[in-house]
Length: 259
Image (cartoon, rainbow, N blue to C red; front, side):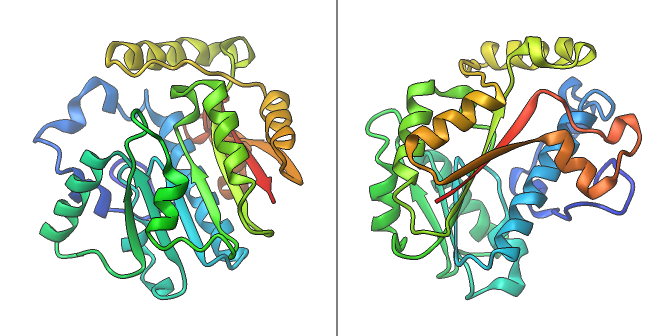
């Protein structure tokens, strides 16, 4: 909303209020509107896709693994009481987010569950979900966006195997990054820069997947159905082919798996 013209795929000013960045943040190199356009539109489109799927499938539980600054629980006021939202993230982040939500006057309503999990010490996020009121007997949508490149393939496989315990009718949506040699050549340099930035910040990208590989892993884990969409395909669903700045990067895909 800050830089792109309407109509907007997602209207969210709450996330910016939560983050409360320092003055001049728009002038940071990593915030350059042109340089970030493909990645920005990809993130917005995939979020819109997940939330549309949640509504279309009429699922009553929404789990976000690595929730970050997601604000669905605050934005979707029309679904209050119909959907239980479970945000799984590191304890320190959850404490900070809870404090910021209260400072902004949103509070933590009964349907919004902040689930702290120390992935480095035990990673038992499934038990933490159950302890926070998640109903394993009812269908759910589980979203894992921007996570799989930071963890090992073994960890992703373990996560998918755990998710096959979801009730029939559940959906898992997981983003993944393609090997660089499968990315459109003009974008490889930018994607490589993003990877180097992650490395420098201490959170390196360590896992890359072809669409065929991630589908195989999901089906081998036990999902009845699994397929992929590229972020660019999701963007085109909402915007048409559009102009170049409004096309998502060719370096990210989305796994959609159903129990």
